[in-house]
Image (cartoon, rainbow, N blue to C red; front, side):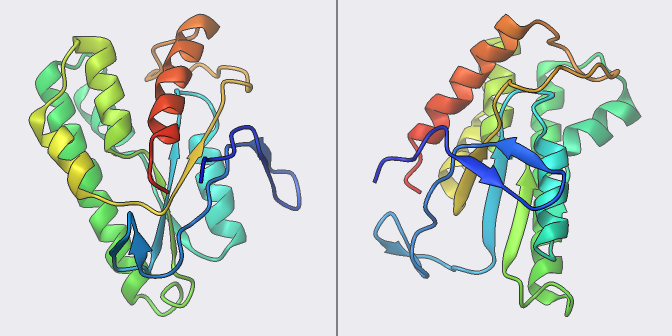
Length: 193
């Protein structure tokens, strides 16, 4: 069915953040084909400064699991904020390496393996939007990974939170953030989950 856009995800306590909610397909099926159903991979996506990291951390804590941080932040803090097109392929590869490490952790660590959930702050669609928005093109490696990798649920964070300045954020104006949000919304609406 069609994703429900505008549904609100409510958690007890202080965390309250609106996000479209998509149905997770039944165990072992996605796009009509069998898949490894556990752990469930839940991606948080959207423009910068929309609460993805905060929400990923809060959901993971509330549900007793772990979350994959955004590798771009680590990369840019280490290598500087002046990046080139080639850097985005390295960042994408680093994000995937990090995701695989956390996926192994959630599968094998006794604390998390029974939970069957992994929250992911950023996926290859974020890398695709970043490449195309800044450089007008996208690395084939990133496009190949989009086709290859499968996720169970996407949570799209809106631009309804105030933009918070930090040394890595690039788009303080609401118009640009909303333009990027619409790009992410189009991606999420076209997912098979």
